[in-house]
Image (cartoon, rainbow, N blue to C red; front, side):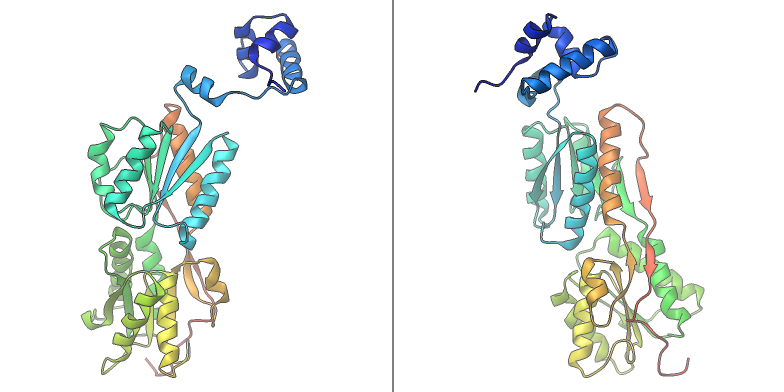
Length: 337
């Protein structure tokens, strides 16, 4: 069966093609009575708009390109759900691509999205954020960075307040009585790691505790990297009684290393993560962590993009507060302070 067209609706309604087009777009130039009649005819005839034809007229495709490091990453998955929820509210479709945390691939994906004429691009955990400022003048579409991993002068970004999150996590441990607090960071030099470490240092300074370089080590943001990093801390002559980890995946690896030593969390050593991934509440014991509102961040990134597409002013650098979630992986140290 042939799909109804605007021409068919115009013939049935006895109006011009432009009147049908305006009515279907909700133009105030068409009376409510005429709009309702045309939309009823469109529904009865099974009319569906042609996005290809519409894009030729409006120069818009109603699609957003989203670049993630990996769709298998629980953080990315939650962020994308927030982006899709907001995209649906604005009648946009989402195209998804992985960068595999490779800067060259990230740039290829962004350029491929441009060539496919998406209306805007969101890049999560960008590995090349510092050069997007130069790229912006050449880009044909607006780009929003979400949790950019490298310092930049880029105009539009959405990020968690990493410094305050790191401060809250470390102050929680200090408040429990811990004086030997370690930090397991990310060895790839990410901005988020630098900021979380900055919060850790500030918490030590506020508590008048000395900073000990040997209590800082690095993983790769995954359990396989967190485990050996924790092993190195446990091998110190005077090991820490608590550790703040760059993210939850690192914390899970650290907890595994602690257990393999015959030690217990939190009785022998307290552990704090960052992100509050779905698995955090089901780890053994449940993980104390700093919650990132991942879906909200995805939604805010999409809303920022919509504002840019509409020519509206938008906050260039949005900072989202985190929330310390206290569970059973932290307690007071066995040794007196």
